[in-house]
Image 1: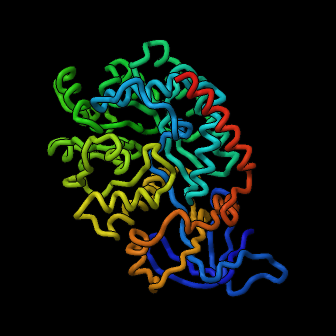
Image 2 (image 1 turned 45 degrees about the vertical axis):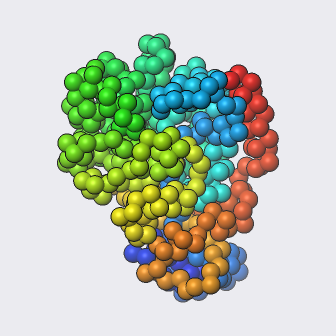
Length: 414
């Protein structure tokens, strides 16, 4: 049992603040509850002057991008979003091998933990090293203590053999672990692969995780090849019928697609910084309802920064609206029965501010004052995985040294 004394606890859902001693139970079903007094002889973390609240979850990530920071520039400057994919990300994912995947996952898990995220929903691709890739990522995340919901990005862009290997990896992984069936954007997924992916999802009673309408080119290709727009195509295949399905981006959805989404059971994840980076447009939530949460799209693991970006790029979104959107991922995970995001996932914030903090003004502090630098310690499944800025379950320096070694190998291949 982990004890937190002198804790100012902020309920993530009600925004009610309460002070006292917390007992944090270990395990997947563990709770965090207040005690009248600390048990005699019990050791406790002193949280005086600090805020304790639920940790964060990354709604859409690409951990295979962990070794990309500072990588060599592409052969020429990309002229379109598809150019960015072909010249940067598809070159990178083709170059990945088992060691690079493992190093990426370990580094990404450490970064997530130190950013206060105890749950990651990831979208992976490694066309020349698909077998066992999801298992490698899961093992790395388990080692650091970060829960996860993984998928492999199915695509026809690398040929039938590669898509078959990816399907087999997805099927094997879902036999043992919770996860989703991943798809790249519609423009690289043919009808036959879509049909087979749907069969895998049905067999394992899970949903999809797919890029949708991130760029105008995705919609244009779908209209040209299929005679319909992206969400119409996905709707006809039943992808939107599952409450476990996640659509990423949704920048270029038209009014008809927005109505389709709103009537569906699927969720949509906003990735503001990535959209700015790729110059594909700004997210517009008009007509989409409230099944929306936030991700990083592999840019980093900092959900505080992602929330601020969502707030700053949407003039109609209030600080409370941005904060609620950050926290909707917990509703997605809980309503679908996914494990690893229970009440005993907490972050301790050493947030010293010249103005009062209350439940009512917390969203304003979150969007204007809080940063990753205020994260002191992190608790996952009731266990301390970051203690005063240092991860506890792996040797951080060894992880980063291994990542740098693999990054050099990757960059040489590029």
